[in-house]
Image 1: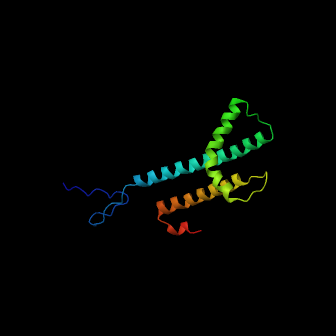
Image 2 (image 1 turned 45 degrees about the horizontal axis):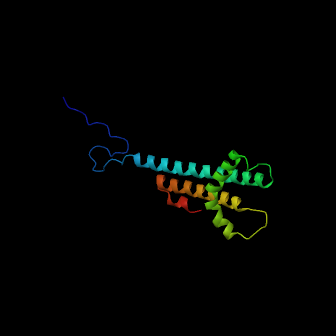
Image 3 (image 1 turned 45 degrees about the vertical axis):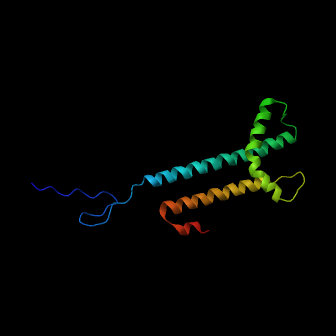
Length: 134
């Protein structure tokens, strides 16, 4: 009774060839998860910037009262989260008086970072380095 050779595994060379099997895909899964987490954090930061701009505007027009402890806590949290990214942009921008467009510029930068990360993930996963070139 002769035993037949087992069928080749997906990604492996047929029997008799000296090519090794393809590496396991676990590393690609980790990369995908890392990029997903980074994109999710960028998305959360996007919404924090928008909320900070809206809350700041509502406070400046006296729609929201900062004497209310909950309003103050929310405004303080949003300020502490977004101000480290907004401060360098404000320092670089010319003074436009009461108009502050630094949140808009930061949102554009976040969008560009998300697009760049998407292209970088594709280049890593599929080996398409040309995809990085705009």
